[in-house]
Image (tube, rainbow, N blue to C red; front, side, top):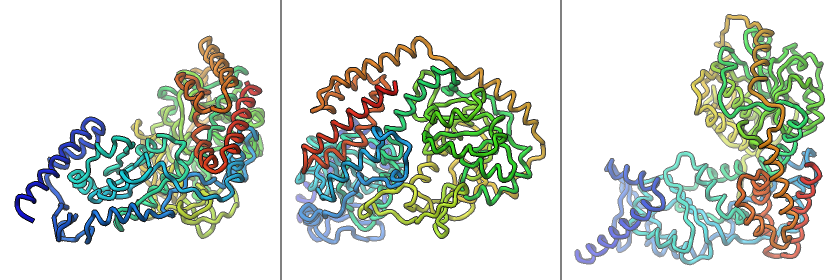
Length: 610
């Protein structure tokens, strides 16, 4: 190649790069800022070289990435996309097979199972969404975007430097002209970008094709598999939101008190709180709790009441966030273990559970849905996260967590102290496994006292949520559990935990109870009654929708974003539409029939309950 030809290539590459920079400035400014900082540092490990008549990605040790013409590599990839390289997002979470807590009209398991029966193992190749795991120099990205029918692409590349080099050879603005591009570049936490990718045309989230750039990016398959597992709509389905909405209104109409947790309070700022969960460390350290129960304000999740009863430990505050009637069994203890305790319950708690408890001691809270203004939300993967969030909002400054192991003993098949169930834990394969189970598929994470422990995607979501909750608070938080490391919470062995002062529990509980009365409400305001009536009018509009085009008509109603029913039904569509469109590919009539009947059943359920 002559110097003139080489100069022309370099000029072309620089022109492409500058065009990409302008594109990112306008459309992806945060990515542009990253690239700008990298250029300012001016320290690079990779470069593009022209070797043996082709472009090559070369590292500082002179290792070559392609070892062939990348144009041929790209052409080979587009002509040989593997039918097996798919993230399968519409597998059913098998944990719901055993749950009987939902009315069958809104039971997410039964709704999806009807689609499974009709799909009957039929295999359809994806043609809507595609993920590039690694960019290298991007030749294969351009080739696949231009020559396939896929419409939405996610590019994942952990090396900002390598991605920057791809900007000299690929016109990303041109690639985005008729396609939608998402970039996840040099992101330690990929969660929010994955959310954006999944929320965009969520009806296409059945099978998502992927291509691994090189052997160096194979680890991304497992990383994204775990993220998709955590984001499964079945982890917190529309049914939970709907039950929370309907029961929350009813409880307030009946005079139950709902906490106003939209702002922080100082109720617990002078208390040393011991927060007890149901993990394996609870039983292992029960003697510590017995010996020190008078030095802490003891807060527990309802699931551990039977263990506390066996060891004559009376909790001061009990927290429960489950909607199921079977939670009533957790309170099947001598009533002295809850009758004088403050009980914090989710507003979606089953009526039969609420009726067991003294009304004057019950304080309801919102979890993922703020039904009434200024009452706040307390999001979390489970009651541990939600309880921690509430305690921090109530002003706790010193908190000790025990029994929040967030891990499993795979050899014993156990993850909790609260039952004797034995489970088979195994590593999850999103490509080949027939069923997702967020409670039994294993992931390796950092340990609290060990180098690493085995956990599940359910627990991993819980671990990450603890960190997010603590972000806005300045507190002393200690994790006494021999399980997973909880970011932002200091590891502390039980044998090194010393408190000398004995707590006057009766006085403390009385003061806490009085303050909770001050920061709660037990009636509906005129405005709230109006909002409920507005939702009733929305419900009437739903009834008038042409069932043959439910989703299109629903989208026109979504302009009323303040409607809680709109938000909840949007969660329903996120759950069911990927299944609907998958079935529609080979049986449109049956897909429409299922979709229409299920939607009608949900509307009828809401009408009856309201």
